[in-house]
Image (cartoon, rainbow, N blue to C red; front, top):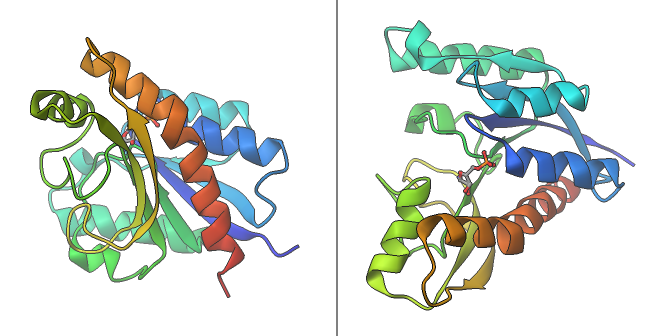
Amino acid sequence: MLKHKIAVLVSGSGTNLQAILDKAAAGELPHVHIALVIADNPAAYALTRAHQANIPTAIVCRKQFSQQEQFEQQLLTVLAQNNIELIVLAGFLAILSGNFVQHYPKRILNIHPSLIPSFCGKGYYGLKVHQAALAYGVKLTGATVHFVNEIPDGGEIISQKAVEILPGDTPEQLQKRVMEQAEWQLLPAAIESVCTNLP
Ligand code: GRF
């Protein structure tokens, strides 16, 4: 089976990374080789998860560079050195410009914790997404996996899963339910599906 090399880009706790690692270990991602985990934050717990799974890691911090362009050039260098074919943004908080994205057309995936086009775009990240869904009063939310283009959360949608909002939910409770019921299944499945169709 031809496996395609992916890099998972992370900033935080890395529960989505863990879901990918677990599915791969269970043999459910036969077309995927998790070749590298890149963090933009040396304290990201996601790095510990990668080490525990014996996945090579790299750290590329925006703060180390005066210009966005230099930061992105370093990311591109590390990705090229590792022959990465598909980039997965799994809670990666650094902004990537349209220029960066053009190097990997239809080869960057992102997971967003809402049903796009609701509660997405600039400023909608982390708990803010769930706070906005609760404030609006929607009864269903969920998660979306999409290709990344130059528009924040605006690329072609690959898959979505709806999750119920329950009376009295806090943003934290909702975030946990969206992860458990949607994100952790949706992202690994989308990666396998995209890799299956890569040349
Ligand atoms: C997830 O909610 C994901 O949808 C969003 O950032 C969060 C990352 O969480 N893009 P984790 O680091 O995978 O635990």
